Image (cartoon, rainbow, N blue to C red):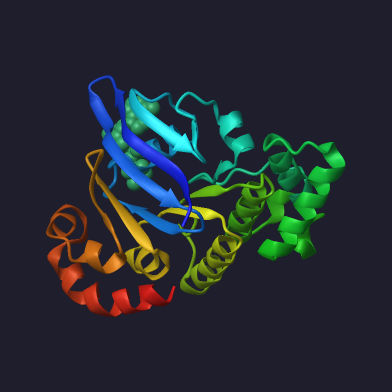
Length: 256
Ligand SMILES: Nc1ncnc2c1ncn2[C@@H]1O[C@H](COP(=O)(O)OP(=O)(O)OP(=O)(O)O)[C@@H](O)[C@H]1O
């Protein structure tokens, strides 16, 4: 296994709030890692620190062997650290294809517009939106807007993709489709960090889970270990959940 991303003692304070506090972990190429924790635990802030949106208060982010602690978001995108946003906001009047091409250009595609359009077409096919490429993005349903967001990130040719609640608002069948797509993305060798509130979802797809609570990483490990960790049960899952899900989900997770 090859290391792709490493956080060393990363912290972020907003005034007196320690949103992220002394967090360290390492990700390997092609891993799917779930990031969970209660509201306000620091998940989105952590993603913002990894992608250069906020400067770190202290600590270090190392991506593919390079210290990227002081990068700006466009530099993160060009290096191959892409993200989706909790609220999906395509440019509504541009076509689906143009929206994805814009993502590719932001990611620094050196071949200019022609290459960006080709990357956009390829990724729209990959996510299953090839047939609506010429439509205005405003006409897309919510599940398809989420697929558009994924295509946009993929067109940046990421090595690590941070997915912030991509399943929120989807029904069960739509979530199954989204998970299948996430597995296909990981099969391309892209490392995935998945912020997700639905435990069934996170347990079924993650090879490893990181748990944040009050900005601190209180547990990390395979799904079964995390579900059975008393600190995680107390801080997030609740005893009822742990009793119900510990065994069967852990079996499911080892298949995924
Ligand atoms: N720009 C900011 N300025 C001040 N405080 C902030 C800022 N961003 C986040 N915080 C605070 O940092 C803490 C962590 O917030 P964050 O949004 O990272 O949590 P989260 O785990 O992503 O929550 P949720 O699951 O609700 O999205 C919270 O107390 C939040 O109010």
